Image (cartoon, rainbow, N blue to C red; front, side):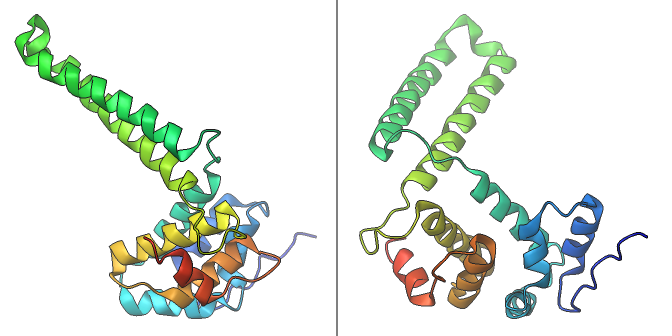
Length: 194
């Protein structure tokens, strides 16, 4: 006898429900919680109220998965910054001498230089965004929790132009299932220096 698919709450975003059904696996517990946890009803309502983009929940889900899949870099923020500053220095130097060289006409080389500069910038942003997450306000927070709080806050500010403190709080609690639930005060203090 085959198992019946779950009955999805009517407030669950259709786009995310389809995404879950396409996977046809029970392995993604986080996605299932985002679709069925009763606390999420207010989250999806708050998002629907602010955007009519039906793909927004899926974009948000993919961002959360990306942020939570980042591995904590083994180096300190200072050493990461030093390494990336050195890479940027050498890249700027190469870009300055390139126009006067015989290679100046080669579009492939220029495209490669652009690709490398984007790679360096992306690498720095991912590395530094993860490492630079422990605040002086509350050192007891895990880096992953603080990183997710700040990333969600930044994402909502960038895309909806609003902080959505309670929405961030609920998403962190549903996604990470911390032993001690995150409060909106913790969310606000984690974002105070952002």
